[in-house]
Length: 361
Image (cartoon, rainbow, N blue to C red; front, side):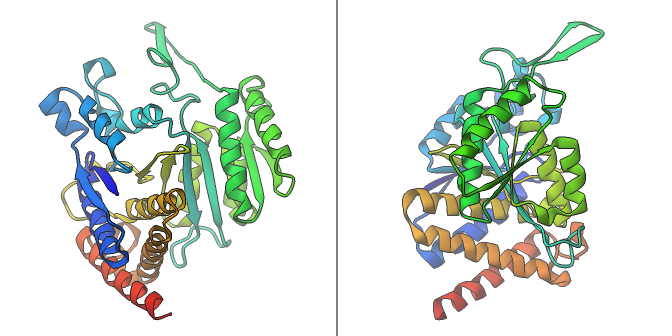
């Protein structure tokens, strides 16, 4: 099974290397048959090839079984016409990775909520207000004159229906509760269409409780008591914002895993950005990308019918959870003293313990 690693910009190469170390340990322990390929993207290839995403990288992504994408500094890329393609948005559209799955759990000693939060944000990933991925040709943002900027929001019945279905199917394996987040009181047509489709899907899942909450109320309710929510489904921008809020409530934006998936392909990606201010200083927290890679293994195990991948995923997650419990083995950004390499070593040691205990059991 071939995994393509795209290290990205800023701290991307450091946390990608840490993640691959963990995956190699899982591969050796659980005999997963993983093979790793690498390709440069981002600012490095912008300098060397005039583009942040070369066509051959897309070909390599197609040939791989799954992709691990490091953070990218797309906010400082030049315009697309000058080679500044956002690899994250481009790959989501190219492979139709319509579902961004972002779980958040309150972590003991780190959580910024007193409530036992354990929820998943299911975010539509291919349209909405995101100008780099909502048009067939051109982008969904433009200026008729120097003093006016316009943005187009794209909502389709097809995308709304399938993201709702992904959320309800996920909820069936959890607490059977879906919350649909929208702003149809103002965006009556576009969010109205999103609601129409989610309600259609909800009728197919009578065993799953379904609530509807307006986005601004949801942002407040998530802070008040996130334990009231299980699976939250929403459009692209709302999901982006709410998942960052939930991750911060769990303890830090750097603690949330994330995968982007279609029905047949998946890409693991950290929730956070490229943090160029700490690049190369051994200060980056690799937790988010490690947990994202674990989610990727779990998804692959389900799709390929290989339980070993799921066992490896749960062991990685358990190891990270245990390491984060101890303030002495946390990274600097969450109050600890460890750098990237030392934290990775701590996770590797705990992974070995967890794997050994599971074999004995």
